[in-house]
Each structure stands twice: as structure tokens, then as C-alpha cells.
Image 1 (cartoon, helix red, strand yellow):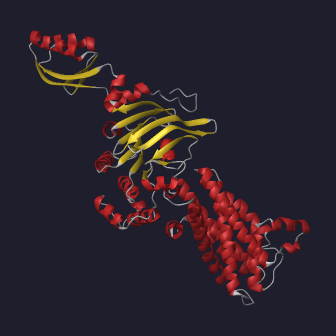
Image 2 (image 1 turned 180 degrees about the vertical axis):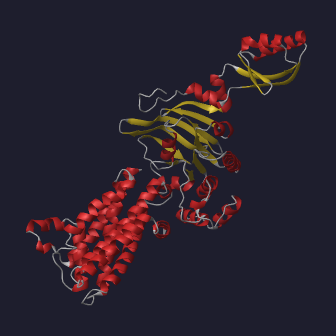
Image 3 (image 1 turned 90 degrees about the horizontal axis):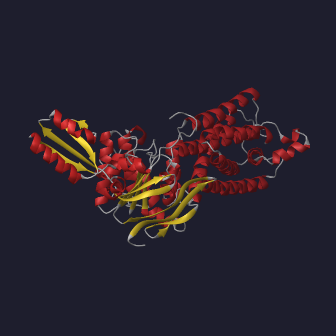
Length: 309
Length: 236
């Protein structure tokens, strides 16, 4: 169990007849960023709540740092930090008071509070309730780190943040991971999914439908490869020839989706000889995580069952 | 130690919340003042009014705290920390009691202006104020945790608090009612508070011996503490 920091085995959560999480299993290695990606209601948050002892496990088992989530709750609590999807600190307390309160609960040294305030550049004397969403999230992350946990759980770390704040949070996640911290995050934000996790599990209707590194997941669904290129001059003959590839045009670049890159490039360079144009830009890319997500998950029906969306 | 840490945070965070101020301070003080001004000589009524003040003070503070903590999910911050459910519940009951005693003492200062007799035993009075606060806090914690939607906690509490004013003998002595109504009175936690306070203030009681009143309030505190811990476990 030592090589893996988080292990989940047949983890399930049922609320009456409704199964929120349905027998999922996964392992997260020490020092890894592991992302749980899925639509709303897929069971991501319930999974985090079970792993962090906030919700009881209906069946199955999970271990954090070798401690059973069911049996060794106190040891699990001491070794994890949780950043929930809402910034849930106390509005009437200042940033420093919030961090000191958390430190006392965990028996952490008060020097950690001073260090975090400096490192995160936090307004120590301002009330938490008066801060912007971005700062609130930073303080919430700092509060989760005050006892120096080995594993950090982050539920939708960039939700409700503006672009700049979200970017800052992503940089923070990467910096924490570079220090060796294991990070388990859930998201439905494709930018987070594309930029942060080393490995991703895609969850739908309580089950993990795919798991792997980004490249592995992209290859799962993508037979095709996107080829993007620019040429000069663009002739009508060229456009006519490319019509069979259903090209897309964006900022002077032409994008086509092809099954065999080699065949397409051979064709393009033959055309270059005959039509006499110059290739000024050329790139290939696999489908995005969003493409993978869309392919592997189904659109959820409206809960009302009757509206026309 | 963690109990004191949580209790200190509770005081800082929730003492000025609208629920604590309106139902916890303004209502009991206005209620006390209205009766005092209307009746003048209010020695027999004073223990009941004091008990009402403690009841509304404690229950409004505790329910405000639970309403906010469940809605804003700050309660989860406590649950995910290495703190036991017993420590969390005890901290909330203690700080509710402290707030209730503060409201009770303020109410007492008003009542003293209208009372003809001196307080018989101040130490006993403080003891019964504390026991009342503990029992009412524990009851309010349990009710606030039991309601599905935390916004409704205050409404549910009023459904319990307001009838208790009548069935406890706080305003009208239980001895004036038919005998069967006494059974209702004995099922009301506030009855023991009123009679205990009456004994410590006036050296007599209506229905229940003060030793039993004290014992019942300790037992009630323990029962509601236990039930509150079970409710936290069921909620999460």
C-alpha cells in the first residue's frame, strides 16, 4: 500500500434507492495530481466526501497513506487537507484568525500561519467575508495547508473564479505538487483537466468510464488527428481540393480532421509542387480532453423529464 | 482545549447574527419588560421570565450558529478536522449556555427593579441558570441538527419554545390548572428550570423539588447531547 497514497476499492455510496457512486476503484501514487472529471451529478463530490470522512462509505473500502478511511478516521483526517468547492471559512474572523483557528484544531505550530500569510501574500487583518472570490479561494487553500498535509483534496478548485484568479490557483496547485504533495482534484472545467492532472479518471453516473494519462485518453476516442496549416498564396484550386476534408478556417489557418496524417501530408506536399504555394505553418494535435469527455459521457436528461432540451 | 477553541470562534462569529440579536436578546428583554411594567410586583413571575430569557438566549444563539454553519458549510470544516463529534457538540452547548446566562443576567437586572423581595440564594440561582442554559442549549442543538432545511430551524424551535412558556408554569402556575395538565407540565423541560430558579430566588417551589429539577436538567442535557451527536453522524 506504501507506493500508493490513495487507494479506493469497490467504493460505493447509496442514498436510499439512489446510487451516487457505484463500485469505483482507483489508485493514486505519491506525488501525483489525479483528476476526477465528470458532468454535474456524476458522483465526483460524493467520492471526495467519502475519502475525506465527510460522508460514510456504503460499501467498499478506501485507504489514505495506508490508513483505512472507515477504521482510522482520525489518522486520515490528520494527513489530509480539503479545499471544498465553496470557500467555507468564517466571515467575521480575519484571515489570520481563520488560519490560527484551523491551526489550533489540528495542533499545528503557529509559525505555519505566518509563513502561509507571507507565501500566499494574504491580507492578514481583513475579515474573510470582505474578500474577493479569488482571495477567498486562496485563503481556503492556505487553511487546508496549515497542518502540512501529505494529501490535498480539491473539489472544483477553480469554480466561480475569474480567469486571472483561476490561473493563479492552477499555478498554486502545480507549485504544491512540485514540493511532492499528492493532489486529488475533481473538476468539470476542461482547462483544469487539460492543464493540471497527471492522470485523469472520467466519471459518469457513479462509475469510472475511463482512466489514464491525457494522451492515453485522447487515443481512446481519437482515430483522427487534427492537422492545422497555413499556406501562401491560397488558391481557389487548393480550396476545391481540400473540400473533401471539410476544412475549418480560423485566423488564416486551415484545420482538417484526418484519419492518416502521413497520407494527408503526402497529398499536401504533392499539391505544393503542382500549385506552387509555400507552407508557412504546420501542426498536428490529438483531440482535446473535452472531445474525450464528450465522446465518453452522455448528455444528462433534464431532471423534469419533460422539457425540450 | 479544542472545545474552548471552537467555543471562542462561535462567540466571535455568531454573537451579532440577526437571529441571536432579535430572538436571543431583544425578544426576551422586551417580554420581561412588558410583564414587569404591566404587573409591577412580579416576584412570583420573575423566575418564569428569567427562564424564558435563558431559553430564548441559548436556543437563538445555538440555532443561528447551526443555521449558518450548515448553510455555508463551515460545519464541514469542523467535521473534517481531527475533532470528535463530542467536542463539537459540547463546544456549541457551552457557548450557547454562556450566551443564555448573559441574556439571563441582563433580564435579571431589569427584574430586580420591580421585585419586592431580595434574591434568596445567588449561588444557587447561578447554578440553576447554568443548568437551564445547558439543558436548553442541548435541546436547541438537537432540534437545529434534526431539521432537514436549516433555514427552518428557528420556526421549528418556536413551535417548541412558545408552547413551553405556557406548559411550564413560567407565566401561570401549574397548580392553577386541572391535575391532568400537570403531566404535560412534567413532560416540559422548562418546568424544571422555572421551579429550580423559583426556589433559588424565592425559597419555595410550585411542583418539583429543586434537587429533582437539577437532576432532570443534567439528565436532559446528557440525553440531548447524545442525540445531537447521533444527528451529526446521520447528517454526514
